[in-house]
Image 1 (cartoon, helix red, strand yellow):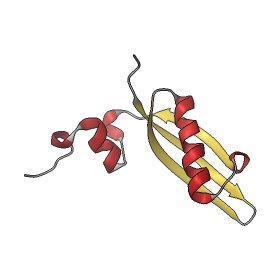
Image 2: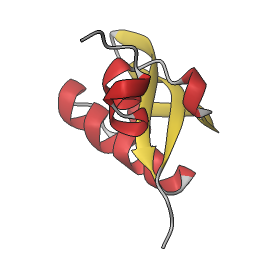
Image 3: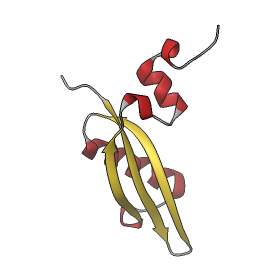
Length: 85
């Protein structure tokens, strides 16, 4: 069974009146799954078709470099995030 990893997907949305860069971190097993998830989320949120979303880079993120605080908490657990009790 494969273990899920965190991937950072970098790209841009190209619509007729909009060119917006994005950087999104997602949990996936393979880079291909991360790209599919980004297509689904951005397509839903911004009403963009797949041909309007240009993926520039997909990279696996080391656990200590995760920027999204929610993903960091999910992957590392509460005690390693630095919560104070």
